[in-house]
Amino acid sequence: MLSRVDPNRKVPQAICICPTRELAQQNKSVLMRMGKFTGITCACAIPPAQKDYVPISRMAPVTDQVVIGTSGTLMKWIGNKKLSTRDIKILVFDEADHMLAEEGFKTDSNRMMKDLRKRPVGCQVLLFSATFNDKVKEFVTSVIKDGNQIFVKKEDLTLEKVKQYKVRVPDEAAKIEVIRDKIFEFGQKVGQVIIFVRTKISTKNVHNALTKEDYVCSSIQGSLDQSEREKVIQEFKDGYTKVLISTDVLARGFDQAQVNLVINYDMPIKFNTRDEPDYEVYLHRIGRAGRFGRKGAVFNLLCGGTDDVVMTKIESYFQHTVPEVPNWKSEDNFETALKDAGLLG
Image (tube, rainbow, N blue to C red):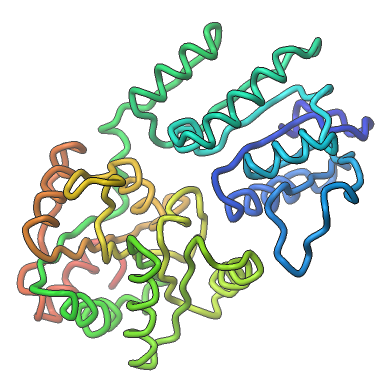
């Protein structure tokens, strides 16, 4: 985007669409650092926090060359003539599989692409993601008939630097015990930890169980107010908290170099299914550990037959056998696992 934009023209020339406000803010931060000496400016199109709310009618038209944001807010700005697409040269979809698989996102994305194709200026469309399912590939092929498509083979995405483990436990209480007394015993010596859960209720329950034991941790889920979400993210990025409990709102694209451990408290399941894994989400989750070529470890906590079925399907899909940490009550076994992952000397 930086290479395509003319810094002398104070009009929007590039749009990047992201699935979450956190990813939009992160991408803006990276773009501003990379373009520090270019004179290029960037607007972030995300839903405003309640305290910062200004009616769109009172908003000044966007003059920044690059606009990064979520699809809903971008469409509102365009629809209210606050964001002109007349001079857009490049349209980028980050986490494109998610953007094009969800109906709401897909509708907005289609509308935006149709609008840009009417323009006299040729617009380049780029779609990025670590994962693309067949349905999305078909969509991309139908929309970008003359484009270049580069896909990495599924088996090349196993993230070899991230060591995965499965831990069988008898019940939910044992999951907390494993996290608290086994993994945290060593885990916080090797970096920050993200614990992924499935629902906001689980977020609250795990947070309460750990803080009751005097562990300093924070939690984030989709229904939090934006200012609260930003505060939680910033505290974690600044290292004030070592443990972050999150729903899948942070599964994609969230970069924090100090995260060496990921714990799947709940396994990722496709919506409205009982035991069908969400393979893309699993891959994105474990990709939060060991960023930028660093080593990392992932512990999958399995409780009952359904979790076993899900884990077996994941192993089969990625053609990768995940070793088991034997005897969840043994502290030594977790120490060995972390040493094997290269996180302990």
